[in-house]
Length: 388
Ligand SMILES: Cc1ncc(COP(=O)(O)O)c(C=O)c1O
Image (cartoon, protein in one colour):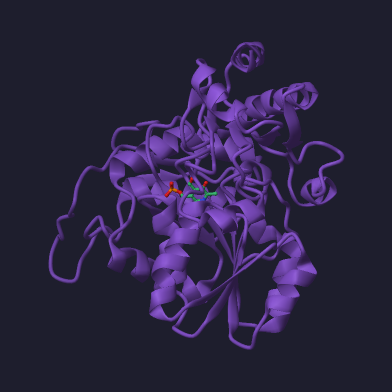
């Protein structure tokens, strides 16, 4: 049904455009068809085309999964209906009693999933500043078998040492699993498996699909031993990505490199502009040479991404700014072509108890900006007008 071409070693920009180079031999279609079919006919008993039922495997989703694996330098990719569904599938690898160390500064939805739900089923979580390797070491227990980090973290842009943490965990227990949520940098800028992580997590809703028009989530890994188990978890839970959203994400990935080049350059310009603004107290952007994680980020990634967080001097400025921006949209989410401004305290991190949020730095003065591909001068003009 498909012919796959092997072009040898290609660069990641090219992989993003061409994926696995599968071409439909019947039609020659350049765009992977949307196989909008729940089930597949068997020629006879014990025979299959390889596709039986779309919860288990679907050709459009498979092309996306293999493309993501290619980009993440992984053997296996798995696509889910959202980033949360991917994280939830990863957690199924643990047993009641296992202890998992998690970045204290990470997406609020992940905090809620672990704290409000999985803790009830006997998993134990510790929330630790994973940018501090010694702090992670101190949090380890005999039953610690997992580490889940975001780097850069959401929303405080802390950088964790993927290599150092993976070594620490694997020396602690050889059966430990280290997962890096790579949503903020995408495989275009960072490949955690090359640095020793066992799993990469993505909210594909963000940079991978890139157009704020669909949800998706991913796991990527290279464990031959876990390959079948992960497929069975995906198939059993039933949160696999549907064919149309798989196709939308595949289409988005084709322009990942050009979007991120533009978004990152825009972000650098805006971060510098914000830093000079009299109403802004501090800008958190790993691209600044004086950001605490700048050198580490540079040593483990190929770019600093297009996310910026900043503290206003006065909390009363926050509602004004959110009301007054017009080109930049006041909305949750990130990574798409449209620039979005988010108020983490009330949106992405609302699930975390207020005292914990504020102690960690998610205060009423913190704003998070996802920079899009618009002309940067228009974005700066919008911010200038909104600040008044
Ligand atoms: C870093 C990060 N990981 C995971 C998620 C969850 O992804 P989704 O919204 O696709 O379920 C988000 C969502 O904002 C996120 O920002």
